Length: 256
Length: 373
Image (tube, rainbow over all chains, first blue to last red; front, side):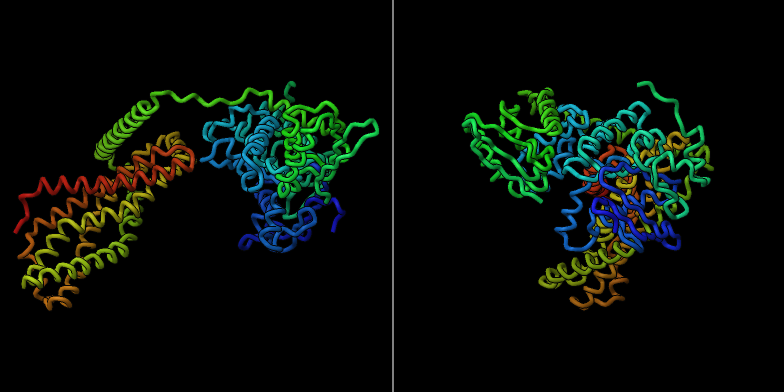
């Protein structure tokens, strides 16, 4: 088992859906404080792997340990305590549509059942401030938000319980380049400031270069490479060639 | 893991120092937040306390807010803290500086405004419904001129889902209602020795009233709600918009097939449920009043003129159109959130059932001269 500061330890993980093997013998260790990007072609099982990391899916074989602890077993209380140590930003935000922005962010805090409303109010306002939203936005309903704001609110909710680990599924999908750059900058600043370990799935090269300290490439049912971007692009594999070296996946550098 | 704690020390220069240590994070704080707050407030009340945060192992925003509130939302004069801790407090000060959100003040005429809003909503809903009916007529006209456009697949699919698959439940409910009605009536009829009138009561009651209404209520709950939910989710996932961009009118592909299918299948379901209910009544009458099956079947046409069956079937036809139109109307009004979906599904079922009973009353008035033996 990896070193003491391994946040996510995946060993010998295999996944099968019906007759198809999605992963075979995947091994991956993510250290504390890293920002790891998970890339791969469509259908390579990135989202499946992410869902296994957060315990929504159980792998067919192998194990995943978060913070050195197994994901499942040991009673509901232990599992809940473990789940509070990470936050997830879903691709479409997954905000509760019948709650206002304020209640969405307050929800995980209220579930702790130990904080009073005044404290929750201060925490919510602080999180809104962190993701650069204004107090008046707290009264809006999710249906009234733009795509960029949905992502920010979802990020604030993911950060509500002060997680050590943040998992992002396509954080910049569906945002225009300008907002996408802003959101990436926000994630980078927050990650540094709060000392987060970040795992993100992305298709966007700019997001990847701006955020990732290491890149894990999924393909052929296994990890093709797990290293810094400079090393990854030297791996000889058709997917890596297409993904990193084709001109069309780069957009002109934005001015800021 | 070190528990967050406060320690009071006397300093060499005579002042007091509150030394904070441990992990001031949400996880650690949550169980002992109340006692910590009390301790902190005690110390904050004392004058000239130096706050020493240097020994804190970890400070997150929850811990920072706890301190921030004991310090009355500003940094205390004598404070020892590390730069990264100060940055969290800066964020807090920044959040405090944002203008607070103010809700719109309530107007004194709120009740009148609410009433007006409700009236406008009802009017809007009514005009939308009338527009939907008009749209269906236009679609029907279009299909008369272009028979190739008739959405057969959608119609037959709805026929199967709302008709064939509803047969078991309508049969079960119909049979039980027939048994119960026959049993209760026979108890009364026995007292007067008017046993043979059970045929009249069951025949008229079930064929003319109970059959159509029963089936309409079941179909409204079963298929109406499904239609509303389906259209609602299609609206949420923008499938209806996608259809529109392909030049496919949702009126023709989504609403019209449902209306036509229910209009066709409801009379058949009424016939089916009525027959089963009469069989239930017949079984019960035989057991209670000793009326033979042969006599029951033989005297039914004499007791109940056949026009009652036609009235029942026409009712079924009208109820079917009504249920489908109401379900589609509410389905298309769903806005993209879960609340709206559930509210509109409820409204669709309630409105459909209420509408069915209202229309049934109209039928009763209009046809009061017809079909009496």
